[in-house]
Image (cartoon, rainbow, N blue to C red; front, side, top):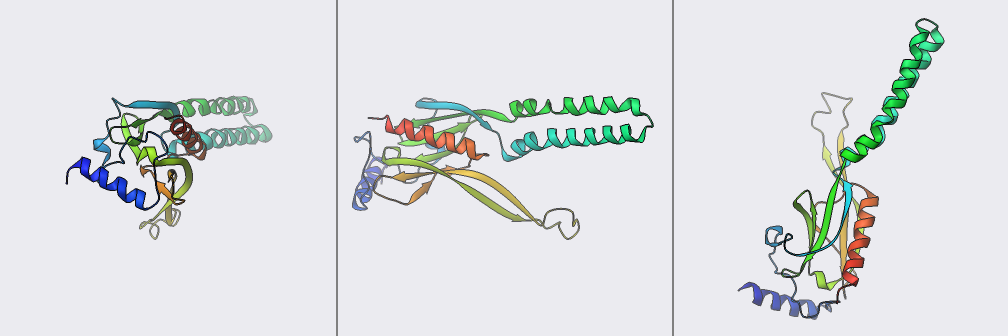
Length: 217
């Protein structure tokens, strides 16, 4: 079966399930076996771009390292000051503590990258690109009535925990996944691919995609 016939057949199946397009009514739904390799984001419509966290590790590093380092240096400064011995070196620790707080804007800048989102209407997909690669996409774009987001945790057992009790027994990978609702179906469908590192990023991106789709005719 060729792609065109497959898409026409999917349109009928979706109609039988009570799902119909909400915009661009002339478009057929996506090919059943579509992959991100079939999506041409370079020559399709760009909806918006924004800066998002590269990953969860960079986010946590930016928010934990500067205050932790500053607290440690301030503590050393107070210890040296209270002991009286080498008290003249205490201001050095205080100065280094204040300087370490300046790491936050640097880590914030380095920890973020450009995210671009758009639609390839030839394949009827919404694509999300981060760093020149498609990280996730949604099929049947003209059937999407709303875009949502939710937390998704992946748990992995650490086999080295018995040998290193200080290590965590379970590693937790947290992402914020995007989901979409199809017109005529209350069940959320996940974007295929990876999620985003923060709730704020996911909320912003889901809102912008919803606005983009609602402006289509």
